[in-house]
Image (tube, rainbow, N blue to C red; front, side, top):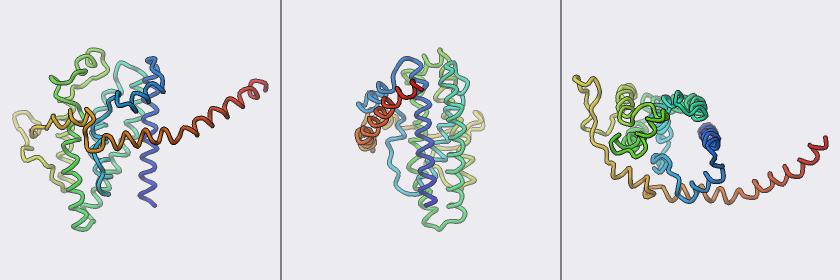
Length: 253
């Protein structure tokens, strides 16, 4: 029950994040219905990380630690971006993501320090699977990113993809040492001259394939989203009918 409560709380939280961002986008003149239609038809792009499967309980902790950790690293600079509705939304989102990251890290720490050998192996397997997709979350290298230059000029993006990715690696390596997990990169090592960690080559063909709609769970996740929208049509219709019925009464009062 406790695990279910945690998951439901996180789902509710993430739903709220989506509402913040839809509201920010609406200030630019695009309606909520247009945004949802673009998502459901596959026109809208979203983070590649959402198309990877969760296979075991350790994934819940790893997603909190790595995925939300990467999101925070990427989103904190946006709290001071030039587009005020976006910045205000990101302030709230980052506060909530910080809780997710801390909860995930603590869950993994508990398993690594007090769990069984099988549980520790489960954590390591989870980290192995999520590490590289998390590095891709920051987007392609700056010289291959189609939108970064314009976003930087407009002040929406304040730190480059490569800088954010390096900052994330530097921070996460030290956290992994405390956890007692190994990051799955044989080329990961400290570079004294750069004062940063060097890391291996990212498979960008994997990134572009997933972004293009051919990831492990692209069709499954989008299909579930569309089905939920269609199955919930009666709720939306009932809410609109109730509102229409009560509006004359409220105006008369």
